[in-house]
Amino acid sequence: MDLPSFLWLWKVAAWSMGLSVTAYGLLAVTGMGSYYLRYQKSPRPQWLRPLHYTIGIIFVTLILLLLAIGIIGTLGHYGNLGHSSHLIAGLVVVSLTIVSAVSASQISPKRPWARRLHLTTNAILFFALAYVSWTGWDVVQKYLD
Image: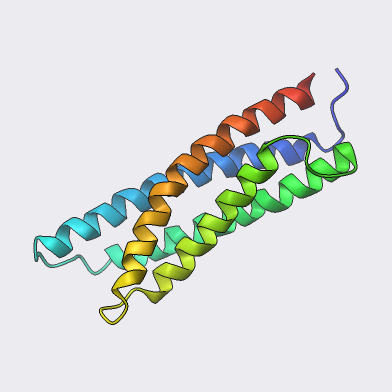
């Protein structure tokens, strides 16, 4: 088995992906909690919004780290990009993550479109994360062969 000398990079990627999916799940829970409390007209705990934002920042950071690892690892192993659908899936996830983060920063009563865009983007992001995970597993198998 001829593994690349940067196997540590794939370990970082695996942990980052696992943490990204965990962060996405936590964002869904805190976001749905906030949404539920908002429409129940219940007071929202003071810590909920800052927690949601903090987890969101961590999620964006992890996704950008995964982008960097993917580019560095693929260029290091193959010398160029585009060997599987994982590249396109990854770029879709990065794009959706950025749209979600930017739309989140625009949410206000004066911009009702921002909340809808944020929620819609995150729903699509669920499927994009599932697809990028699946294609990533395929890529890992190629490296291990």
